[in-house]
Amino acid sequence: MHTIVTNFSRKVIVPEEGIKLKNEPEPVVRKKYEQEIDRILITKGCLEARITALALEISATFKRIKELDCYVILKGGMFFAADLIRALDEQSDIRTKLDFIKCSSYGNSSKSSGKVDLYKIDELQGENVLLIEDIVDTGKTLKILQEMIGKNAKRFKTCVLLDKGIAKDVQVDFVGFQIPRVFVGGYGLDYAGHYRGLPEIVVIRKELLKK
Ligand code: IMP
Image (cartoon, rainbow, N blue to C red; front, side, top):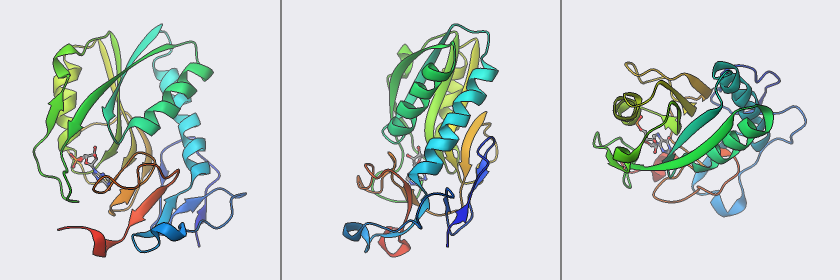
């Protein structure tokens, strides 16, 4: 049974069994993915509710600024960023700008390679910068990005949708959900290119993951 969450005003700690809204039915994995996906961890409704609250948190922090340069890490952060930036523009007086950074560290495995390839980093600029990332695992990717982008900005903040609570020496200003140490997909996140289009965050079956 999924845990029902009603308060989305701060980082939500997600238990192993997953979370849902009170009015959502018990989430079930679509038949076509049953062999690959173990369970739904965060429902579409919970994602929407937390992202709306995150936009309020971000606009309160950046409240006196006119323009916010949002840099999205591709590809995993794209759905999160699309919803977050629209919520920011809708709910605040801040004007948003959007650009992308291509970054890859995982390849086809579920373990961080420790090697991060970045594209477009030289062109990054802006007074007030928000870096938007899908997930923090070891924190290696984010640390490199923060060092490279942060030095050019007057005010620099980082926002991630999911945090596995493992990364130590990296600071994240805004976190959507803290999740258990499982490999997840959906809502932009993938395993070997799959599952990005799912509207919820799901847990990939352990048997499927390459060591
Ligand atoms: P880190 O450098 O170990 O923090 O890994 C960060 C990157 O690895 C993220 O931007 C994701 O692209 C990928 N990643 C880490 N954990 C997961 C996961 O559970 N599912 C999908 N991608 C993940």
